Image (cartoon, rainbow, N blue to C red):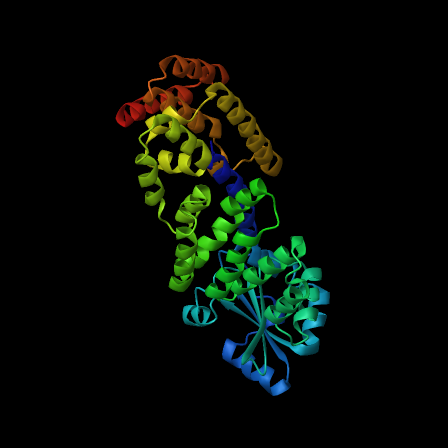
Length: 388
């Protein structure tokens, strides 16, 4: 069973760190950018025959502030910029039209222009240390775009198979995605979907995780990319039901999967379908409050589920404590075991598995004999009754 609460907590740790940096370093733009506007910086780059470097940032962006404090002030960065670049920093919230024209989708985004600021030759996303930025400027400053460099890298391994070819397609697709070329990105990621050199189990894990996130982004942004993915999905419906279901999720069409599942009359076939499509199907059912179905076709070893939840809960607690010590932020000061254990209990109650539900109830109170745990189990029973 998937544990979305645990994932939320883990992501929140990283977000909180970025937020702290943002609060500590909410200062003026670093000196390397001066006070030039985008238009002025572009004109200067053209006049002096230099490359134009644009740093797209936001006041609330933690990694941006980390770069302001640690990267842009570094002597090696200043030296690299002085040689052949005119640098300008823009706030995407203050200059929304410019940010839209530059196709900014995340921060920080670095864009490098040649030909007096007229031709984009490279862009990159995310925090960069001084060393990483100097290295990127050296490579990007050669005048050959990142897309062209990645195309060359792909051409060198194209048709040879193996991890090198897969990596080349992935990196080119990610570059297209960063640049807002969603249809081109979709082509590369679809190639990975259909040609991965991994074993079947590893391939399915990749489809469920990395590729699902990337393909959802291109499908949400491009009607043409969505059309390509719909064609891919329709071709898998009979031969590869799991891939079909994952593609339904990517296309925000989970109702197709649920309609198919609900149409299976034979119980043994339905149990098999549930097992084949887990954990995606399980999450669909839980998100719709269908605890009875999960308790009927899943939760085969509920006490082991609880033990797994307890283990993962401790890992999260240890990670949070290691990050913050005794000063844990309020949004991270919770016990993920409580809510997730309540879900297990609700599923068993809804499915009429009362003896096992009682065992889970007792184990929950043994592990967490608290008012919060008791109240959660009470509410879980109420939700179970609604689901029956």
